[in-house]
Amino acid sequence: MDAKRSHGGDWAGYAAQYGHAPLDFSANISPLGVPDGVRAAICAAAETADRYPDPECRALRAAIARHEGVPMEQILCGNGAADLIFRVAQAVRPRRALVTAPSFTEYEAALASVGCTVTRWPLDAAFRLGEDVLEAITPETDVVFLSQPNNPSGVGVARTLLARVARRCARMDCLLVLDECFIDFLDEPEAASMIRRLNEFPQLLILRAFTKFYALAGVRLGYALCANEALLCRLGAIAQPWSVSSLAAAAGVAALEEDAYAGHLRALIARERPWLKAQLQSLGLFVAEGEANFLLFRSPCALDEPLRERGILLRCCADFAALDETWYRTAVRTREENGRLVAAIREVLQ
Image (tube, rainbow, N blue to C red; front, side):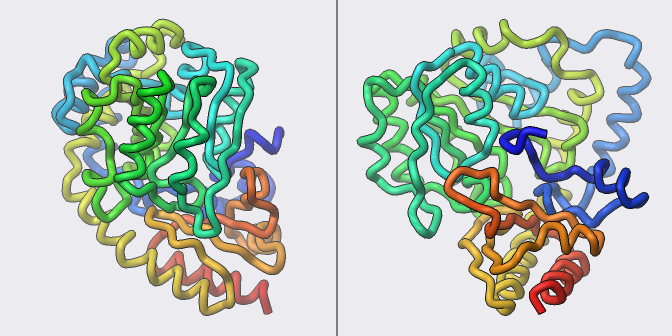
């Protein structure tokens, strides 16, 4: 496998090697599993699996429109956020792009597929984006990729800076792709989002997904939001036919009704993230000030293989720009699971 395209969550590879499922901290998925209402919706949708899915995703887009408070015309659905990232690259075909370092590896993979020259803009020691990034956005920049919050650090971008970046991109006639796939895990997701400013910035395209928050990684469902309907049409035109299955669409509609699940999950992450961070720090590890459902930390010794032998998957971050094999990302899960991870790391360090 190409290291640049590797990801966490390879439970299947682990099961093939060891004959049983691992405790997976390598993928930042909700530890509560698929909501019951979503399971029921997927089962019900199976009754119509003999028909082609709606290529316009009408019911799903209507549900997203109600949930996000935007017109249906500003919504495009896809086969996960990664699908939409690659569509952006194919539709825009940028010559020069700006990404932060570190950031989600699929941005550069998509840009490389169209021969785009990528500038990596370094985050500071606390993994925060500085105001000096504004000067890096020039008339030669065709697209900027940012994530709110960042993956793999979990650190968010200041709201005032995000607005300034959007204005700068508008002046430079540059597309700003803002990845908000983890934003629902923040303490104040609505305040951190740029969705309410879509009409103000037509060159802003926001990415969302059902993958992490609703534990639908295997379903593959994401969506883009943009006031530039012509750009959404271009993204839609290059999609494979029926890129969103009827089962995925039904799952998405049902997920947006899971208010109790969302509240429970946010409370769990708000409780467990600081606990897990404190436990890792007590082992002498440096931990970034993450705000999402995962933590980035540094270890003086290798952890991925020793933990794998103990039945635990952890994400080594050596393939992220600006990081190396000493950096690891762990999901935040339940107290019992988090305790098992801490105990295993303590054993390896000792």
